[in-house]
Length: 581
View: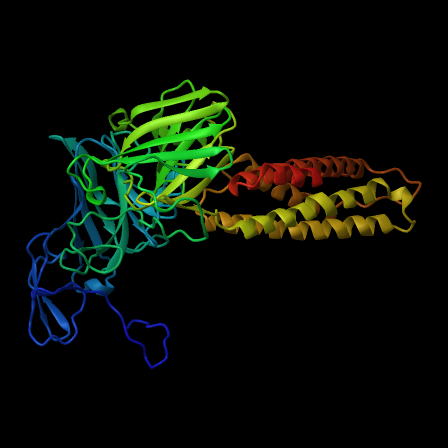
């Protein structure tokens, strides 16, 4: 990249990515800058060759506007595609261009290819094919199958769409317009794609069978990685491995221990201890070990389910965990969401734990297991920095956790760092603002109406009532906006628990209450009988007001509990806040 002057600022279009073979074969992909010779570039995927001349790369290999180009998405999953350019059009700024795509999967399962603006699932669009039906276009509204929604009929514009399961393969084919109104455009250049497939022909959660990848449709059949052009046969990375780079880390326990010789210990929280040891087979090196395992023991003071999770980014969704419930088999789980029904045991063939048990004895819950550190299709446990998650319940039945946290643990030294959950200040502001609204201003507004006879005459009670309710509504809108924005920032589903759903219901009810107050029927002069419509409005206004106040009290209490769980606050602090509230 370069700028337009000597001040470091945005580069605009003056930048590109390229691969360079330092052994002498030259540039691969991108735009070469004034080479002294005409090096030859080699596409390792299909043997295509391009010659770089001056500032331009002359394509002499497969042209994806003429022939199908290929991209290995994963082992046993192939993508083929061709750009269809109408006569008289140029592919780079084409009107009416389409892409013909073919996905070939070794096995029988539903298949999907998605188009994204940021490489993330939520908000993307996909073509999903299920054997026995016609491939169609979908909106990806979340991680649960229930929010994978068919696009409206007028947007189902695929042509030559089919999916078949024959000879041990599932093959999906379709042709799609590259630019369609209101949809993510497929560019003749860099694109963010997602692939996924199921384990059978029923549309259900994909588990680990998915990834994001970049693909430059203008290149010579080259699939790009997260940045720039790379070998298309390299496996695409689904989630950036940020282990050990989590912000807001606090130096914890450990350091300087040999955890291959004896058990190392890490205090997860008060009354919750982790012990572990790395088992290295003879003749192996722990850093490059094939067949290394980890013995782990979790000791919790109390009777409850306990869990240790393995993550690539310190977040729950997409991670994997070992969960132990006293009296039940200790198993490996996929953490697909925040609700109990999305925490699912892994398939039987992945239940590879040995010496696994969870017992309650002498007032403690003790879970033990041995796990292979590197298993196909699972998060690898490294002999170095790892992102772990811990959690436990309040009882031996698997329900929403009563406490949990993320932490970074270096298995080579025993050094641990606790990771503070993000956005603590935003959620604290949300709680304080809404406490002022529903714990202070709304109760005083209600009291001004109920105790109007104790106030000076002349309608002063009404001025207080209206003024305090106006302030509380403004605070409510601000607190609600903070909640929605922070939930977006954390990439969590909206209105996914009772507290959030109640907040939405209260927001709607409060707006209706205010509108009702503005357009209320007039009170008749003193001595005249109230009209039925006025009587009905007064009853409704009071009932809705009392209902909102009761909901507000419940919301504040529930919010304190959720905040305590999210940020692992001390139970005595939580009790003090509850008493003050």
